[in-house]
Amino acid sequence: MKKLFRIKALVVATLLAVTFANTANAQVLPDDNEFVYVAMDLQGVLDLTLATDPNVEFTFNTIPSYVNGIIKPNVTELRVESTVPWDLYVQAETAQWDQLQPFSSAGTDIIPSTLLEVRVIDGANNSALTDFTGLTDTRLDIVGSIATADGIAAGSYLTTPATHFFRVDYRIIPTLTAQYQAGYYGLNVIYTLAEDL
Image 1 (cartoon, rainbow, N blue to C red):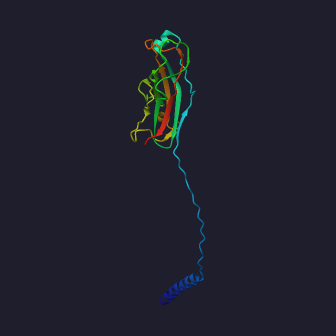
Image 2 (cartoon, helix red, strand yellow):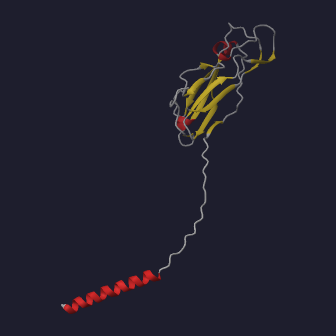
């Protein structure tokens, strides 16, 4: 038993000697560090794309077209891509149509912008504007309003078409009672995509 104890003691002593020898011979190496500064610029994206012809023309040349009006369905297509929540608005640029060329001097050339009505349908075939609504030079809410957190979440018409894709129908009913002056008229319609603040 004593012999076994001596062997164990000798093994332990040898291990301690080797450990102390390695520690004594170990060298402390100096550190050499280089630093790289990495910056990331995350800019908000609000991209409204008009994917159709920006010119829409109505021609009224019969009594039924004056009385019943003309509807142009799915004439304007809007696509939204954003990295932030957003709202969408529409309005006429001015409160009345611009007469570009008169064809007659009879009647009035003052035509209110409300004669042009819009209806907006999203990618899920839901009406963002429930019925045709006349445009004024004041913003009309399609999605969201000036209230906070009432808009649509970030995304793209490619991945979430139900909420980021819109088709617009236009309607004009001149009627015979207003007796508008014959002529060629124009009106700019403004669609605005804004961050939902």
